[in-house]
Every structure is written in structure tokens, then in C-alpha cells.
Image 1 (cartoon, helix red, strand yellow):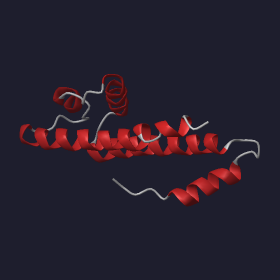
Image 2 (tube, helix red, strand yellow; image 1 turned 90 degrees about the vertical axis):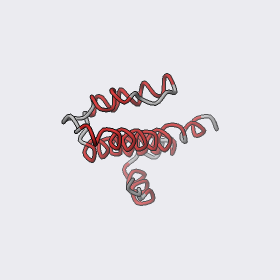
Image 3 (tube, one colour; image 1 turned 135 degrees about the horizontal axis):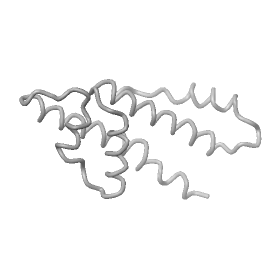
Image 4 (cartoon, helix red, strand yellow; image 1 turned 180 degrees about the vertical axis):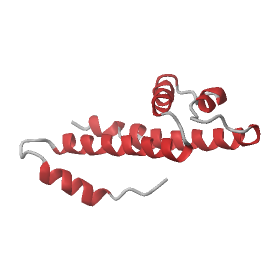
Length: 114
């Protein structure tokens, strides 16, 4: 997964924000945009339907269960060859869980500190 340069982007966001706006709000907006871009990048790299990826993320957050092989493979824009399916499934699930862990699970503590 590509590395994200946080400092310049946060500083740019801060310059554009109103003085009364909370830092948390600016960061939430920034983090949401980074999450959307990470999901889009996954869809481009793996040739996936973005709606299906968003649904897999929502299902995982609701149930805590990884997506089924058929769910992942049906999210592909082109049906993968039989010999490639196992690799594609493992790679997509791994990247999907990385996105969830980075952008959703790790951010939970931020809102609770008030």
C-alpha cells in the first residue's frame, strides 16, 4: 500500500479552514478523503467495482467476518481465470483489511477523547 504524506496535506487543509473550525473536524475531513482515495486505488489496482468494495467494507464492519470468496470474485470487473482466483481473493482481502484497520479501526480512539 502506498505511503501517505500526512503533514503537507493536513497543513493545506488547515490553511483553508475557518478559524473557529475544530482541528478534529479538519482532520476527520482529511482522513475521510484519504480513505476514499485508498478505496479508489484498491479498485483501480485490482479492477474492482467500487460499490461492491464499499459493501464488503460495510458488511465486515457490521459482522466482523471477512468477505466470502464468491463475494470478492463477483466484485471483479472481469471474471478472473480459475488459476488466478485464489491469489486474487487473498490479495484483495488483505488490502481490504489493511484499509479497514488503517482508516476505521485505528481512528476509533480519536472521537472518544473529548
